[in-house]
Image (cartoon, rainbow, N blue to C red; front, side, top):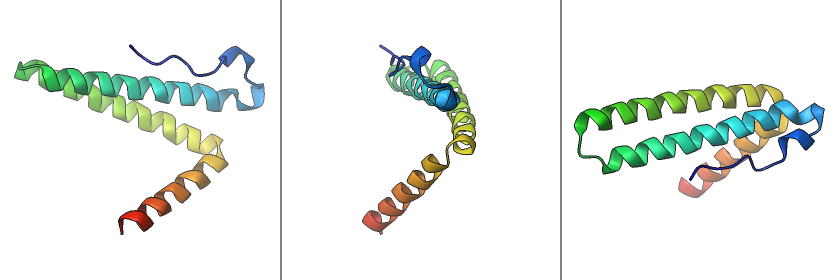
Length: 93
């Protein structure tokens, strides 16, 4: 049901290990967000829906925390995110 870590983390070079740990953590958070939002969408219980959405939002915060750390670790990631943002602006302008 949920994603597996896409790499053999024990084989990652020590110089990039923290980046890969952060990416794996981000994948886990995205999985959790998706799961909770999907469950919230199908329940008819408004209290359960509210709790699921609250937890999904907390997972979004966790994702942001991991992303902030990754961006401190990986200057190339920062550059590529900016390029992606510029491309989207160009396409959607």
